[in-house]
Image (cartoon, one colour):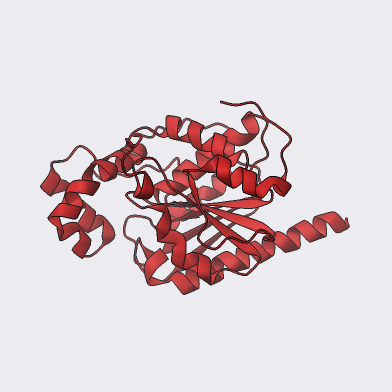
Length: 272
C-alpha cells in the first residue's frame, strides 16, 4: 500500500493515466465539479454504466471501475477474495480528484463500503458520500446456499433465479463458458465475506433498491443505516435486481437528487 501524498484534483489527467487499467471514463469532463465512481455487480464490466453517464447532470463526470478479469481486463485473473481487491482499489481511489462519490452496485456496494472505510485508515480523504444499490447491508448476509461452488448448470440456474427472470445471455453457452470463472470469482467475493464490524463510514450513505428484487428487501437496504455516522436515506425504484437497466432514467434522477442534496449541504457548511 503506497503512502499518502498531497495530490489535488488539478492533476486529473495524470491521475486518470495512473488509474489505468482500472478506470474508464465514458464522457470525459475536465471541468466537472464532482466524480461519480461506480463499481459494478457480479460479472459486470465498466461499460454497464455507460448509458447512466449520459443521464447525469453536466457537471458530474462518471468514472467506471474495471475489475481484474472483467471487460477490457478479461485476460487477467479475477480476484476471488474481497480484501486483496479492496487493498488494490484503495490505491487507485486515493488519487481520485475531490470531491467524489462512490457508487457500488450489488457486490460492488460491498467493495465500495470496505474501500470507503479503508481510505481514512491510511490517511487518505474518503468519498463525499457512499451510494449503494441492490445490496443488503454488510452485516446482513444472504441465507441462500452459496452459488460460487456449484456445477456449471446449477450455477446458471441459480443466476437465472437471482435475476428474477430468464436471462437470454445465460443461455448462450459460448458466452457463459467465457464468463463463468469471472462470475464464480465475483460471487465468491460476496459469499465468503465475513463482516467483522469496525468503524462506520463518516460520510452519508444513500441506499437504492428494486421494488421487485426478492434477493434484497427494503429491510436489507435499511440495514445500511448502521454503517454511517452521517445522514442516511433509502430509495426504492421499479424493477428487480437490475433496475440499473430497467429503470435507468429514474435511477439517474434519484442519484441526481442525492448529489444535489450533497452540494446543498456542502454550501451550507461553508456558509456557517
